Length: 292
Length: 126
Length: 142
Image (cartoon, rainbow over all chains, first blue to last red; front, side):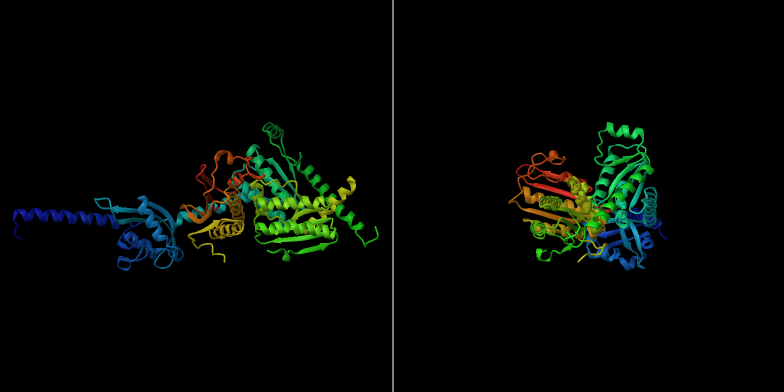
């Protein structure tokens, strides 16, 4: 091939360099298959679609160019206008990162981690958006499994046991954080309703330290149980606990305390007997008018 | 809810009243009036107020219930709340409304037994 | 009509002018709580707190306009309900004191603010004498 004149040679070399650079960038983009890299125009329609985007969403570039980004959202999110809200947030805040459900071409849902960044021209005006999406389904499922396991462990460590007709025992084991404490209370109240319990025994021998927080929570639980007509008895108070509670000025009000579970149970049965006696006693005096 | 449809049932010397739905303040005040009048009219010695149908109780409703119980006590009868649901019990305690002085029971059955105990204690005290 | 748990409701606004509005306040909070998938206990706590805050507006900002705005919120990790109670009443002079148990101006239970704070996950107050009060509460799905 004949050598072109010097000026043209320079131009064609620069053109060649630019083409090489574009090929290089394209190759780099194509190599990324773990992330979807998408360009959206100002209206939110797909302007560029990487190979990773195809791998993740299932659509080829031809199928989605020009289509709105809401195409990949779930029906509910689409109906709620979520896509527009997310673009608006990116526009205002300069960047938006969020997690949500998206839908593949085959209809399958996946958990998406999305970063949306505005692309600006030299004047600073937004011309388009760069969107990077990754598949978080595995992490999401794992987090859900862990959550369920944690719930099960919490259930196991704070079981409500029915030790007698109308008597429940709650052996509190370990430390209480607010979530665990809340579940404890809810679980107990539901069990009270289910078993029509009249007495609850809180066995706190398994609680290492009874501080103000634990005492407050115990008191709140006792009060809530009282609103459901239940009498509470506490047992398992160790000398250190008794000292700590008095020093902290914790006032447990009318909450009865017994040293051992057995003693608490005896008290519970005594109370139940009194209840039964009262009911039986009056049955005799209720009769036809004029007698008794 | 108008007080025409406030169900009042008589079980021996006890009246059982069931509150339901989302009561507005005016309805709550009307109920307060109706309950005290019923106790006076019938000479009942006990009243059970079933609140199991109330999905949320705020400080106003709690206050009115406490007042009703006090009024009925002045009329020589005992009143107890029955059927406070677990979520309501938790919310009331967290809200901090003082309700420890009110007699409560899980349901009507336990409520009747409670009223009998209270009456018996009265008899003993006298 | 109760919406399905996975529907997204934008927001709703309720005027708080007289005591009959309290029922609508509670219903609105219930609807949003269900839509956000809150547990029954959390729904009840939200409604109870909301009822107290709405009541505050009626009791302490008499003659002033009160408004409730309820919306679904999402912070990527979890979803929940946010309720904003705003009034153009006299305002609270000492917000810190109002948030402390035992504080009382009118009525035996004070402003119900400490109790409401315990019932929800987040509570913020913006208030000053002469420029009204805004209380924002948030309850997240656990």
